[in-house]
Image 1 (cartoon, rainbow, N blue to C red):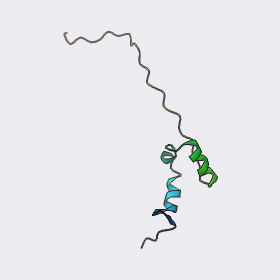
Image 2 (image 1 turned 30 degrees about the vertical axis):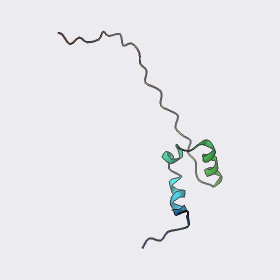
Image 3 (image 1 turned 60 degrees about the vertical axis):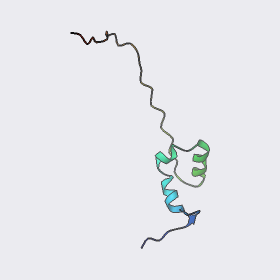
Amino acid sequence: MHRTGVTFDGDDIGTWRWAQQNAGVQAQLMPEQRERLAALGIPVTEPAPPAPAARRGRTGRRPRSSAA
């Protein structure tokens, strides 16, 4: 039998607390929210920097022709 822990507005606080450690969850939070998690003693991961945009430019090749 599964026993629920402490709940608030129907949410299990223990389940919520463990979910907050997920880097994917933390990536969606604002910096102030991450600070609040740290104040609660929840390990905070820094969000990954955005991936660099793909460079687009001339390749030095001519477009292919459909006629051979």
